[in-house]
Length: 373
Image (cartoon, rainbow, N blue to C red; front, side, top):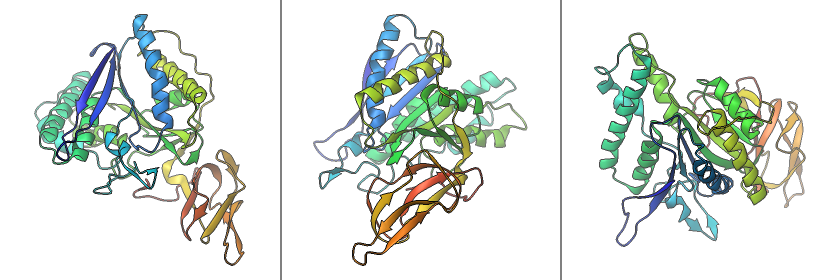
């Protein structure tokens, strides 16, 4: 086990922030796995899960059970952790630019594509290493000229994981079931992860817009395959996913400890830890991200719910109500499509037209940029 402190460039005189990185196992031996939490710094469930995972990894290393390299960044956003206003954390967007900390990562295929023209060959395994080396090169160059602390943070996180086999980015929603976002590239691994951790829903999309951290690892391989696939074999590259560990208030030691144990099951199943993996959960629903329909507030007022996250609902079903306290008018909140209501907003007040919940179904309802701000 090794603990590294990675400084970020100082944004102002007399200040400096840093990332803390825990390394387990040996580089180059077995699969490389990167886990991080708190990229949205107002989301604590995943941060606590990794606190419980660290001693499990330390014990596994002490027993000689590690078969790969595991990197853990337990708090991936020191900038966001310092942003508070009116006694509330504001860790989703960077305060100076209002840029979402989980959007706008470097486009690796665009940055590395030209230099790969003369480096790729007919050996797919060699091309895997060649592409990863090119990713490391371009990120080193970009990091050397990063103009802001925010840019340096994103480039540093990506440089640590760009050559990983498995990348898990731990988040949470407002109120939700345990679910995840993934691409279509590795369906078997998506199903395995769901069965290991107990996810209820997997939302699948190859390109959802915004270049979030998870897609910054999967989209480049898709784009390189489109560019070079007719001439050179290009592998699928990394399996990368965003894990939504339920809701913002689901922060409990017993829950986090169980979740950490389930992550160890997954690490064992993919060969990063020695032993026999026995996933105990049924597979999740696998549905298109474009089939996640939004539910909107019919008026401003007080929100009360009937349906809970995880409920199967019908199109047109009443999910709750919004009451206008001035007029006493009470209007229903209706599901626009059938499926699982997997998430809802935390706040119990709303504005007219505000998004209040999402229902995941199997029919495509929307396209373009599918991620919220």
